[in-house]
Length: 250
Image (cartoon, rainbow, N blue to C red; front, side, top):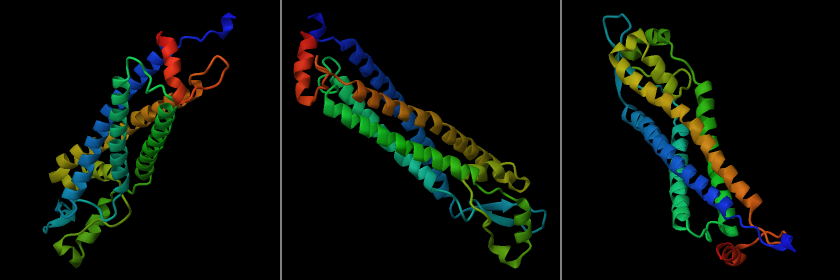
């Protein structure tokens, strides 16, 4: 009967390979951007951990304020950096397999490869999501800079050798964006303004980064659900792949 003949699904798997390759390239590009932005965040924190500047309080004696507050969220940037690095390796590795196996698709369409790709991209998407959530939560819960506190501390004898802002916990975006507009920090407004723009870009780029991660995970899950089946409806395993592809390529 004609219904027992195997159906050629070569076009379907060619489309899946194209989608995988496009998504992998985008993943590598976004990962590179995230790595660059978050690396600059970490570098800024490390370079300015023990530095300060003269905060203008109106008093004759200048007040040296530490460049960073005492309590600063640093884990979200490092988590995003790790997630982006892992995503880059995942994207490059998977893309290499897709390109090398482009003509026949025997390896990338094998059951074990599709299963491993699904779990790998799903795990990676969860890691990226955690990074996005941690950055968003810390930004929403960040404290806000109050110049009045600096003026109050500046009048105390302990401030003669400098002071560090120690009220609340900040993310670097809130700290830099509010310091660039503070009247007493005009001498470093340009530096804080530059870092503010970098932090804004780093937070917003995490959204398409997470969306792309889940798109790849969804593609991997769909490939596992669709799979390749025998004429009797049974899903083919890896050892059957060569036989099946031989039918399609005959």
